[in-house]
Length: 73
Image (tube, rainbow, N blue to C red):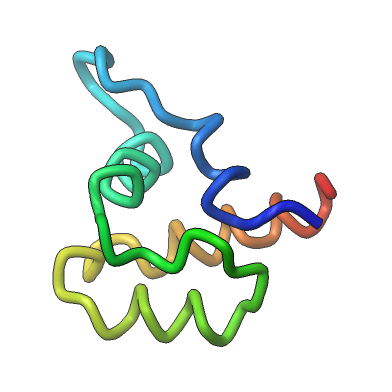
């Protein structure tokens, strides 16, 4: 299974005038130099998202993208 970071990058759309929550999350992850880029572990990624204030509005979005990630790979 490829890392979650690689999966979520397909949702990046930096030129979107009105980005969706998923596009915003993907862009935040892309710009985050500390994001665990090689991880495929839900608990590691979920903890990282939940403990970083920059992602506070995206916890539910992360859960949705995680489900898609599991179904896609």
